[in-house]
Image (cartoon, rainbow, N blue to C red):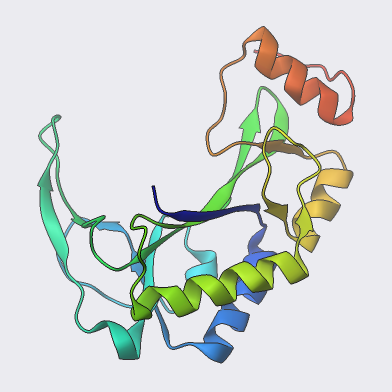
Length: 186
């Protein structure tokens, strides 16, 4: 098990997060998965709606994706989880039933012992999130929530885990508890 920090963040929150990281580190961010092996820097990582691989460019050397042949026959290129890269999974807006919802994001290291090209970024990110985001008000989810996402939540948005849960009684009870009973149509 590696190191992780979870959060709910809307694009404004993510922009501030990446601006802060870039002020202290030469962060290289690129989509985690691609249909080709080329590793190209994302110019606006906060706007990416996919998982990103992050590392300190001047310390990390050349990183490569490896070819993956999936069970369904699809061929993709992904970063090896044993590589010294962090996974940044952005929060995503979605709909649960008919309700606007926000999936939880995370910053994750797959390795227990981080190398210099990721440890500095992770430490800076964790400290920044703890100082600038609030603790998530929902104990089941944990983590943190950015200021824009918190305002969105207070205006009636629904916070979800990293997946859109099935419409089971337990999950619907959790969702109803956020703002009181809602009308959810299938």
